[in-house]
Amino acid sequence: MDHLEHNRRQWDRYVARGQRFTRPVEDRQLRRLLAGLQQDGWLRDELQGRRVLCLAAGGGKHGILYALAGAEVTVVDLSGEMLALDRQLAARHRLVIRTVQTSMEDLSMFPPASFQVVVQPVSTCYVPRVQRVFEQVARVLEPGGLYVSQHKQPAALQASSRPGPQGYVLRVPYDHRGPLPEDEPGLHREAGTREYLHTWEALLGGMCRAGFVIEDLQEPRHGRPGAEPGSFAHRSRYLPPFVRVKARRRTGPQPAASGGGTLLQP
Image (cartoon, rainbow, N blue to C red):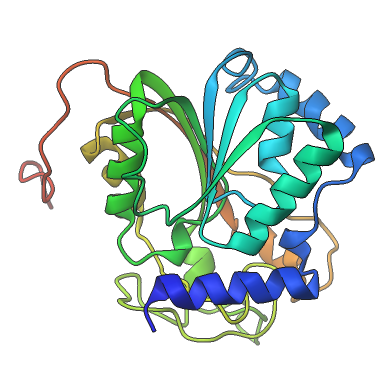
């Protein structure tokens, strides 16, 4: 079974179990999230009336939020059950949202330059070849369009879930190939899925090679002083789990695929 079918089945199971990322956003949460989105310097002025693709973002949260902010929303997800949550919530809020079941690696059903904004929550860890994702996003995003994505930081996927005598230790090498080994249950991994480690070169360099200019980068804060050792908040003080990237599709000719630079290498 390939990674797509394996992960699709697992996320369908998650919906049946009510796993934390499959719980549709509640009305009180929506008000808070919408207020935060209206203050977001990256997206605040990019949503009203815009064609927005919420990529790998089923589950009844992102699509609903951006539709309420005035965007024309399409939600793509590998899991049909996750997309069903979006349709249910959209009907409850009387919103029009388009849902498409497909992989983030295959957006061939959309014509070039179909969208003005692409928003992608943490999900690139579920594919072995992240470059393919960036190329697909670049194709469906119009020149000058905005791509806001969030990813798991490489070190957070390398390290152990629980601290030992020497703290958190690296369990896999930086150039690890193939699915990551199973780990203890925790909030930084989704048990039962196939996850893959992507280096900084693959993430940031991959966006640039696909035709994006990186405008900003954030590391969402999840650490908390005094948190219990081994908890998500404690681990996050030492290993920031996520990175959020703001990128803009180039308006000029797109770069040819490259295997990396050759100058000024140590």
